[in-house]
Length: 317
Image (cartoon, rainbow, N blue to C red; front, top):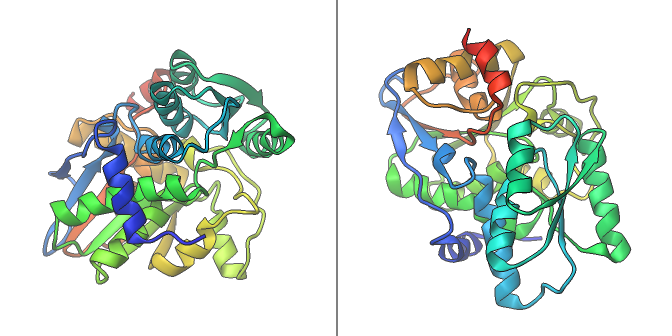
C-alpha cells in the first residue's frame, strides 16, 4: 500500500465542507527557545477529534467510486474514530457497526449511538479489533480500519498540509501515536513539503507498540495497561501498514508516563483554557517532561477533547 502527497491533497478536496481547517495557536504557556510552541486545535472539529478527517475521506471515496453496497461499514474504535465514522456514514447514507471496548468513555459511546451507529461491546480494544475484522471477513460488511486504511491515513494527513501552510517555518511537529494513522499521514505530508521539519511521535508507557516493535525490527505484541490516554492504547493489527510508514517518515518516538499525562492535561486546562482528553495530552506531556527538547517553531497536535466529566473533574481538583 502506497500513500503519497497527491492522495492527501485529494483527501483535502473530498473533506472540504464536512471537516474544518483548525486553528494553529501560539501557546502562552509552553515555550521553545528561538521560536514558539503552537497548538493545532483538532479539538474544535465537529466530533471533537481529528479522526473525522479520515472517516469523512473514506465515506466520500466510497461514494465516488461506487464500491459501497447495502452491507454496513464495520470498524473498531475506543471512541473518536467511531464518532467520526458515525457522522460521515450518516451524512453519506451508510449503515455502521462499531465494535467498542467495554471500558470506552461514556461520552464517546453516547456520541456514537446518538449519530446512529450500532455498537458491539467487547472485552478490550484488542478484542474489539479482532472481532470487527472477523465479522467483516465473514461477509457481514466492509472493514474500515481506524488507522491502517489508505483513505483514513490520507485524511489524517490533511493536518500536515494545514500545518505547513499555517507555519511555513516549522522546525518540529509533535504527534500522539496510537495505531499510527495520524503520524503516518502527517509524516508523509510534512516530509514531502517540509523535509527539514522533524516529526516526533509520543507513545504512552502503558502501550508503546511502535517503540518496542521498532527496537525489535519487527511487529511485536505488548501487554497493554490502563491509561488516561485511552485512545492511544492497544496492540497493532498484525496487518497494519503504519509500522513501515512510521519507520520511514518519523524522526523520533518518545514515551511518556501517566503522571506526565495528568500534569499536561491539567496544565492545558489551567493555562490554555482548553478541554482536552488524555490522548491529546501526550504532546504537551512530552515537552513538560523534557523527553522532547523544543527548539524553534514547534507544533503540537491536540488531537481530541472527548473526555468524561467523571475523569476530568478529579484531575482538576
